[in-house]
Image (cartoon, rainbow, N blue to C red; front, side, top):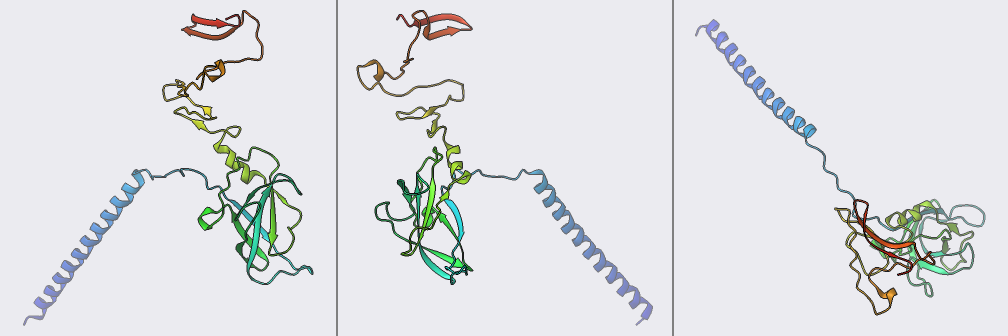
Length: 236
């Protein structure tokens, strides 16, 4: 066998293998480029939360009378919201009722604990307060001990709940029969769908009642392009 010929044959195979590998790498690179390009061109899809999770994240420390941290473990704790810094009325308890509160188990590590007050996913009562008042205080009690002092005043985190409301009332785009802040539809029109409740004028679906007005002052007016079409003044 001619050794030169064998050498040339081996070289040809190597070149063929090299070209195959190079081609495969090119294909992989092309696919990767197309994938990255597509990912860069297509907008990322995000979904807004349908609502807020009404729970207060409370963090604190538990210490013994000598100032040392309590032992690690789970402790029975009670959380309540009041309308005063001391005494006052109970407005909410995490578990149980204001008249018969029950404990929730809270883990403590190196004296530090964290609890989501109002965490309905883990058995807490839902927080239904509208946070439309500046006097909300969180009281905490551990086991059979007295309530810890002082109570903690609830600040911005709780009042963020009221961002879903306007002065404590919900908005509505379809009208309603309860108290709500009216909102116009997509055409800018305000539809009033409440039903008349009786024969008195105050039972009307639409009722205007200023405290006082001069007899010639307009109470209700309709116009088109600034031209008066209908008016009711204080004289009737």
